Length: 74
Image 1: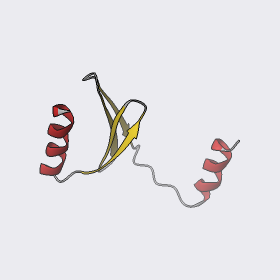
Image 2: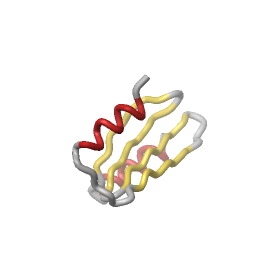
Image 3: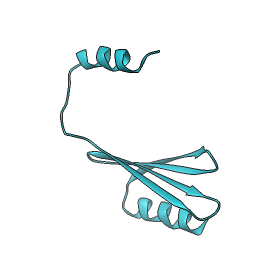
């Protein structure tokens, strides 16, 4: 629990937006910084997992929405 609280304190100190969610057997912290999104999971056994999603910087127009739905629909 200390790792989670320390991490949240650092995010707040650095004015990094985040939100919390319960996922699997832990707490998920989703943080957003320019060009990146972080998913940091804290588990009861003390394990911490970090995943980073980094943008390519490419911006599309609304025509990309149809492609996204086609790619991810049943």
